Image (tube, rainbow, N blue to C red; front, top):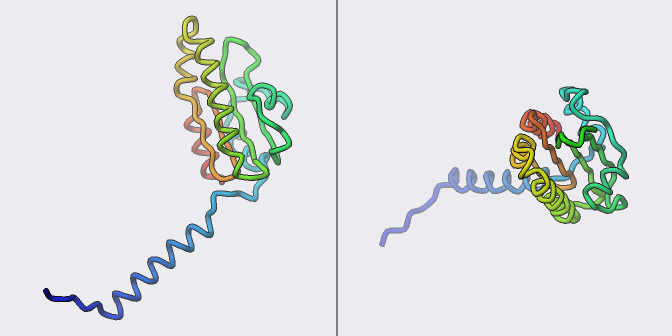
Length: 159
């Protein structure tokens, strides 16, 4: 069996590649230093003001069933019409370890809403089916809207 001898250049390239990968993991741990307001700002700039109105952090905690003391900030918009499921929730958590708990709370909320709208509001049910729920480090994004993809793209580009 013939053993291949690696050149110094090949070894250096592999070491540099591994170093770069480690750097990326350390540099982007998934946490952001931006406030919830800063995260939401570009999304709100492209949001149709007639689609949703701003609600309080307490309204969000009550609707989704999460503990406000675990958050640094909450931005919550909802349509005032009970027959419109449009919502936008952006949360910055104190600790990224709480992101799974918050994501589960939002998923449970959406499941309850789907059961509510399934039989008598097919368009609203479709919006709920296509909602976006994403937790990334110490942030959570949830949106049910006809423009959810556009809002999510703007949110992700601002992280």
